[in-house]
Picture 1 (cartoon, each protein chain N blue to C red):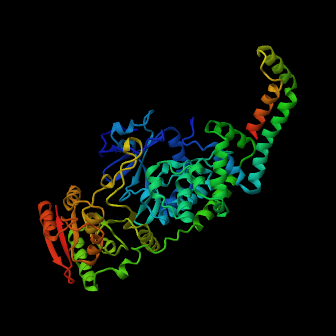
Picture 2 (picture 1 turned 90 degrees about the vertical axis):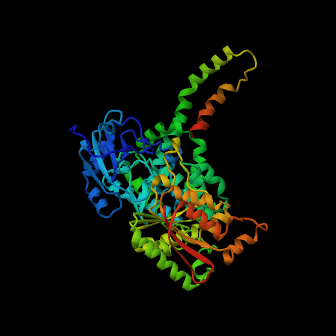
Length: 83
Length: 476
């Protein structure tokens, strides 16, 4: 049984192989990124109650200095990372 | 398997430890590869295809056969954690060399060989698990792939694991030399893993991005590197698989990479040494006599291994090769050695290995424990050394005392043909012209002969017809 690959192929190097693979490669990349983009939207949609919870949690735990925009920021942050 | 007494003495190859299922041990006349687990499965997968026979027949992989486990002593069979399950015997490459000693053409041919093997492997549902030019060696000027353990079964949906390594150790060094005229040798010698995408990207200008391969394999690669970390690679692999990444994609990418690499050209231009034969400072009569002298020495010694130090266009290497098994031809001038390599490659020469190297700064031991990549003498000492039109460069240009140079050659325990250009030789005068009055006082015929006789038996010496140079044939 092979547990670990002998050589780490590298995240970026693997993505690049899809991007460079012509039409078929772009299809793979779109599918892959599509899923990621899609997941952002679903996260957003599903997230409203979660965001509300977060707001409550934040306001509850914070003293006074946490600005109201903080929950919105936590929503945006993963989107930026994943695109 | 049998536990009979093994009939060969072996030692572990210190550079072979990365692959836990496949390790190399060195025997007297052959190299052995000990296999277990996944390594054995992969060997079985390769040996069941018609590809193995085909690659062995055309010489693109090193001679390989499976032998009985009992060939190896028990301690060699125990070097893998779970014990050995099979042993391969490989043909011995006459002299091991490394990419930081190769010319542009050699690295390019080594890169192309790996890509060709990857394409052929893909057709058999196999792949190469890495893409290191260290997996390629040269028999003379003919490349051959030595890492049989690199062939593995292809996992559907996974990209080519060797792509990144191919870029760092093959493509970027070639691009640097071809597009920027930056020698790759110091870089590869300084970094066992090669050039990172980030470092390569820093060298290419915005304008360079329009040259083939730079935008995609360098700039985009570096950009993606800055956004994705190594610890995500497991997730990315899974996502690619789910997104229907197919084997055809690897094939298309490798084919494109092959096209890119095969079209790269390094315009070496004329260096002081490329046309040396036509404009050198000695006469035809001198050259003719030197050729006869070398031929007679080589014929008398019938050496296994010759080192031609400062080989220039390889004229004397060719003469030595008439009577030697293998000649390693070194010169520090990359352009000259590349021209030599190309002509030897065209002839299909398997006897003369051309290498780029500076005698005053030779290849050190590198990698883990300084043993993964070995020094030149560690890879095999010569029976005969040619040091023609060399000692004035070592002594005057590099300032190595004559006594120390001779000490070093003596430590190799080799016979030698050495040429001493006297102080009135035009080249010696030129080298001395930039020095202070009285510099390199040890560079003197009388002193040289005394030092030589203190370390070697002088078998023969002849002044060349011009009267400015003397040839010596010596033995330890």
